[in-house]
Length: 282
Image (tube, rainbow, N blue to C red; front, side, top):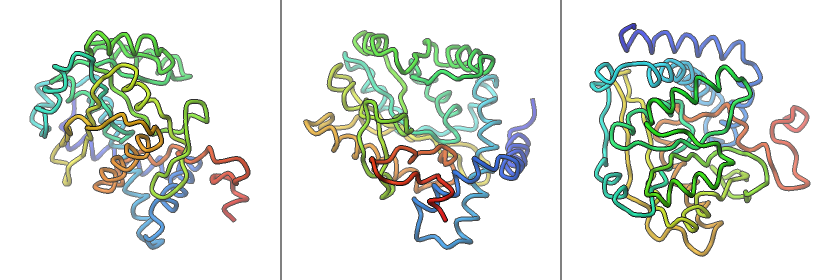
């Protein structure tokens, strides 16, 4: 109900509070930033950490906007670049994998995409049943198509073969199953290979997009890139690394807006120390 700028101002304060009380998440973010931006000074890393938690708090308000704000209230806040790329790919008979990453603007960015194309969102079910119920119903309401649990491979492939669009973010560490070790910001990262495998099985086009919160809280920009060419290749590791590097390039534009509170590097090759282990850090 509040004006847009007020919501983000409140979100910043929520984020500042979270930075002080969510100590375990703050520690994860600190470690991630040190690993991924080693050339930054301690002062610069601290400033980036504060900016990230402000973005995280704003992201909570943006999620509420994504689920419950009217189209009329949101339309003046967004600029979409490359909508023609998605429109062109949607005409592809084998469906579209709409590829992105876990940004703090993720839910709102997805809401903007639905104005151009309905999609199934691939998601990991939440342990909290109340939150799970809200998330499932509101994502369905906004994306026009039911979300698909990440383990429902048959449902996912069926949707693609019917020419539908599927939203997918492959940038979190879910363990060794169906994953390989690649580099993410120069750090060894356990990365799911599903994008390449699904594209090969289904023949779907892979269209990357990235949501960005503009400076000064004036609104948002969503960049939709052309469908990836020569993808998938015959080298699944090269495909997976290619996606990581593409994500890196957009994360670096607004690094505070990426979800650094996730333990992106928790799974390491056998014999290596846990990067989030206090003993290892010392």
